[in-house]
Image (cartoon, rainbow, N blue to C red):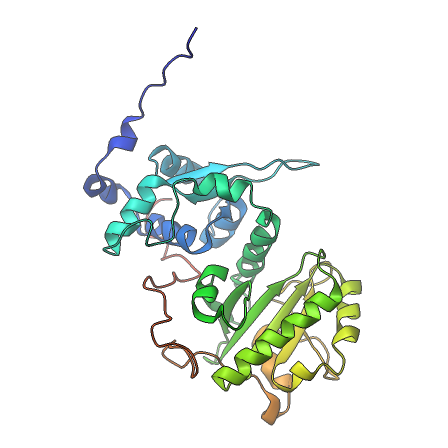
Amino acid sequence: MPPPRRRANPDRRVPLTLLARRLTSRDIWTLEMLLEHTVLTSTHLTDLLTVSRRSVNRRLATLTRLGVIDSFRPHHRPGSAPEHYVLGTTGAALLAARYATTPAALGWHRDQATRAMFSPFLTHDTGTRTFFTHLTRTTASGEHLTTWWSERRCAQLWDDLATPDGYGQITGPTGSSTPFFVEFDTGTESLPRLATKLDSYAELATTTRTRPLLLFTLHSTTRETNLHQRLTGHRALDHLAVATTSRDQHHPADDAWLPVGRPATRTRLVGLPGTWPANLRPTPVLAADDEPAAGLRPDARPAVPAPAPLPPPHIDRY
């Protein structure tokens, strides 16, 4: 016998003009974050939205029912993985209308969930999201993450030169900002392979006439120590400021960062540039107005702006 037909979900036929009236500003922010970062877990969204997990899960279930987002749960052993969310068909259409373009032009694919679920890089990608999510944590010192760009956005600007896993900027209570590139290490690449990544960043530094700050987040303190030994005397350190941390011992928002090639103790990310002498301190690869530095194409900037790392104020029920 043929399988029973599913009843069409009436919510999925809601016109965009009516659907938009049902979405809060935080819903729109969630859609833009999924467009920017492709996959976010329920844990990521709970941490970012700073409300209870129950409230977040209830709202995500509503958005899924509306077809605005899709979800999947990858196989995980032992235990179970959290729900993973991607931008759905209706959500992509809504954002495309918002930016007067098409879902394809936004980089969205109809099989977004399937591609993400079977991606060999899913663990690496969600780990990178976790790293940045940790940096959004409110600290007593008043530091906050003001910029969080995805690997895809970085590729649009710097792919011919370097391929970071993300780009961010953290701002201190005095208004001083520390921009940085991130390399998220899962331990699957050899240390010589990690060391060769510095060469492309050195080329980026030469092309843009800047001195970027490159961060390595490693899965263990032992691997971090070995990487420091491997990078001793590396010629790319003449053009870069490099620092590391280990996830088994340190939280990235704390005194976790150890400069490479400098006799220094661990420090907070916002104070990291001060550990180098004045003539060797990192300089931003973007101008003050977030325009690309010298040496990059003027049309390299993506058409859709990156969302803020933190959601709008909690004025609606979520």
